[in-house]
Length: 222
Ligand code: MG
Ligand code: ZN
Image 1: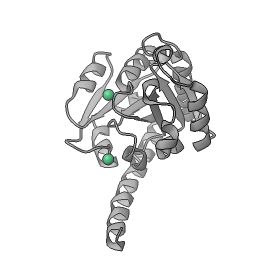
Image 2: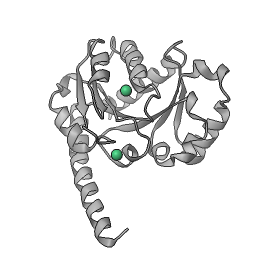
Image 3: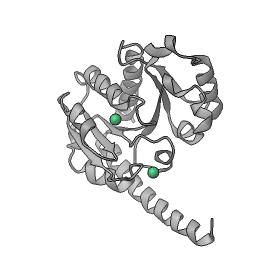
Image 4: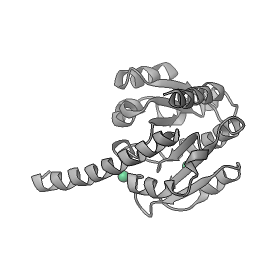
């Protein structure tokens, strides 16, 4: 890469980071815990969110930003669960950036929000490199993806606070080692929290939502 290109990339990133820092300060001031959900397309982000919202809605005030390259389909699914939802259509962009999130944030009543989910565009590569001002990144992967994903796409796993394994009800039909994925994931990030879930059977959802509730409570105490 030429020196000139490096400079342009650095400028784009620093403008993004500046805006992300402003968003983070705003969320912190309002006591909102924000989760940036990152995964490949089709790993089950929206379905996990639908289940998560149903389980947590009775006790916490929730909101969702649903990012997609095209369509509002995911936002429309989530809106049926009776919480504030804003769609972000990137129009070809393969990740969300801080500007899009900062703009979408104005549609939420932050003083009446405890937990905000940001469903990133399905892509395990560049979403890992763009700070959105979130409290934590959470990486999802489904058991159909192959257990070496953490070492193939280490940046996403390194920067995440938690890994949520999805579709575990399919494990009996697959050559998939839960032990191996955990071993790979922890080799990249020893501090990664780990949840093994199935939105279909409900397995592991209590542990996942319990962890989220704990994060929200810790933020309120700080
Ligand atoms: Mg989705
Ligand atoms: Zn991208």
